Length: 151
Image (cartoon, rainbow, N blue to C red; front, side):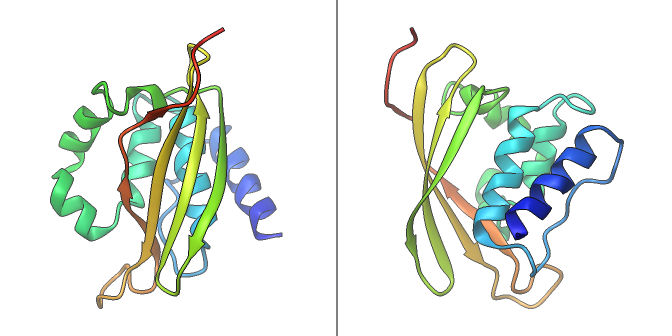
């Protein structure tokens, strides 16, 4: 049911200039990954790099320290390591391990060229006090693993 609610939220934000979805403690780990991937799949809707900005909203504070400010994150997303996630055709989220405060997923995407790639995607619950307390946020995304060639 929560997954359907998340899809509805994404549908509504796609067709309106609604606010970016913000982290909150009611979102489940898979919902966080789904929000990020759906945003990246439609990166330039409703404005240029809106998907990257949405993804940044769910970057764990420790991850943000590593990647730097949003402008650095946007630049990083256009590198050879991550650009294939932008405007991808399809994605699948596979649960690997679910620990109490950290959840591991394997994400398969088919990029805009038809190439199937995989990523290790880790979300972690924020334990620090502050506005993200108890929110699930992405702490790590691996380099891509090529799973197939384009057809």
